[in-house]
Image (tube, rainbow, N blue to C red; front, top):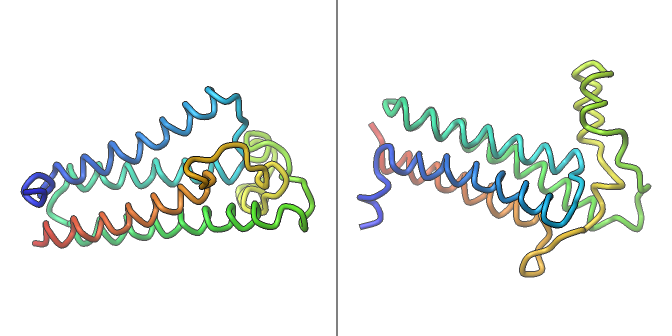
Length: 163
């Protein structure tokens, strides 16, 4: 029954809505609890948006499910990598310097792209703060679970929709 519901465009639209739903949830958590996101949090949001756009493109161009699955899995793996790095920083917050660096906007306005990306992914400090948890899991841990789930969902959809 579930396979019939998500086969074709519907499954990809569900992926799109879920990705942007998580970004919306992150924004709600940020405003509800008055939290400032660190560069790694922002990077994870960007990857969720890229993943959502890839799901939307797969819905709009359904002739290439394997191609889009490959892109979706790569994006999910990239997001998982950022989430793992963020989780690692939080797990080692007592042993690393507490300096996350300058703000995200400042970096991209005042540094070349390569340098700005290096600064974003070097994150410490604010990135080490655990300001919010759900069921005992931190935001990067929850993001990691979501990225793994989206990667598996992309592979599942490609299998259902193979041409």
